Length: 343
Image 1 (spheres, helix red, strand yellow):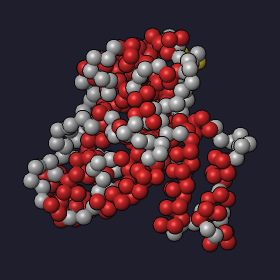
Image 2: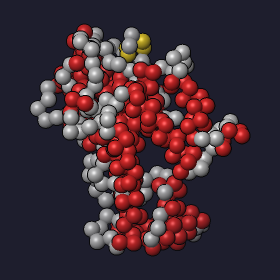
Image 3: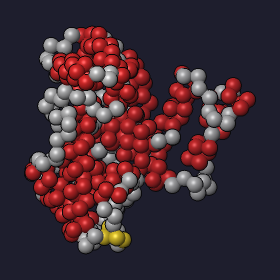
Image 4: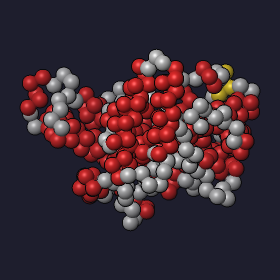
């Protein structure tokens, strides 16, 4: 079970814009988790810290909810009951026990045993809790501003959108989109192909209009959302690369004391913390000092790895984090991310 995703799902119960079908679920979850997350008592949702702890420092994280371990267990239990009771699913390896009471089935799972046993070395509980807390914080924040920047109309779809999403969308425009896409995919005549592509561009242009008919709104919103994700994702990755390279330029090519690889050779897992860093930079409050932004960005970086950041005052990489922040901001100001073919 992905505990960060679970935390983000729990946080959605506090969203104001949930569909009607999800409101009963949200109300029940707010009531269930209210003992740990109560917006009317800010002191109840801040991290519990020890004297001298890193998290006792003032900062952005200290103003956000930090669900405790019992809430994580309750969230796992709730998710499991939904899975096996509401959706009638079985857990791999259950066998004949699948007819037992849901609680008994839960207690037999390796995940529950690992989370609740006193001697479970295979579970890093601090990291598991950080993952859940990070998901909850991100769910409460919503999308970072780096991924919600407005974009101009695009007349070509985001990569994979026609295959992954278009197939399931309702409405006449979605049906026409599927028909044109299928026809162009099998067309061998150059002139006819160009005509089909123009029809598609005209159709995509209609998704950006203010007067999209009600029956086409889901299709139009899906198309626009996919385009926004792709364009902003490319910009976010470009800023992340600049931050990474700025850090390495400051540190003589070292990260954590080890020679660092070039950006193109990083896996998605290895580069994602730099995207988290960029999110912290882009969401910096107005008037925040550069050093404070660098501290928040470094903490966001380590938090994305479910690790505690080194104490800022004694962090030997402090100036490297500052260099990363400055590099990301220079890239953002330059606004020179190469446009893709759909722009």
